[in-house]
Length: 254
Image (cartoon, rainbow, N blue to C red; front, side):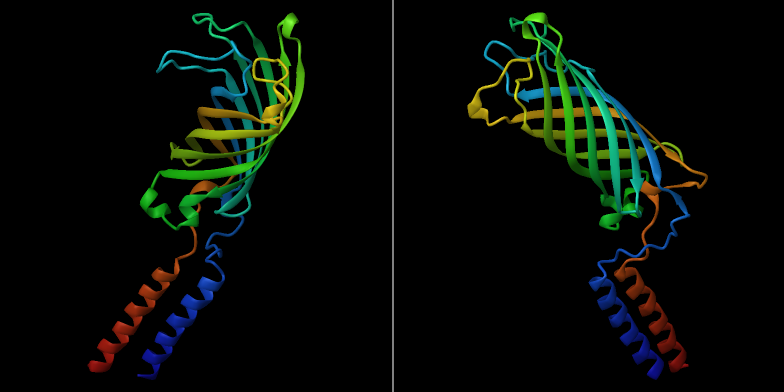
């Protein structure tokens, strides 16, 4: 009986302790999975606002536009949290099929973000299987160059971005990744068509990135950081202790 009481107390203590520690403890050592991942994606960068009057980007619904490329490196501190540094390029121009005035500009970007693996954060990696979801957010600086002589402008932008990246594991070290990111610039002197914007916009700008690509896990270990497993959750530990208590009760009845 004393063993049963002790195990019950141990279960309660273990649950309380892990709740206070927010269940961040891992059952994988730092050497058990590859922390560094390379991401290569391509897709559409769509400037939303601001545009000067009579300048705009518009295509038929369903048209696939590929005007951006991104190369990034991500380092996972543990199976939940990581950091990402990425370099990107995008091109914005008018659609010749509509009546927008002509413009053509290039953008070069550098981003620094924090990354959260939601499957491990919510301890649902077992249910997700080969699927996974990353949430990321941070800062981006960019340099914009207009390529038309009459609209020759250069601008250095600074903004914040937030996005989510669904993943599907193809192999132990390779995954398919898609991404949707919203960028909000709070220092942008010119419009997305290359002219100085109205002061009423307070140097703001909005852009949406959508992309698709691949990730590759660098390292000698087989476990990718995005699929590294968390330690048993509190409920799993309690369930295990409950089984042990039941076993002891059964033995005592005998």
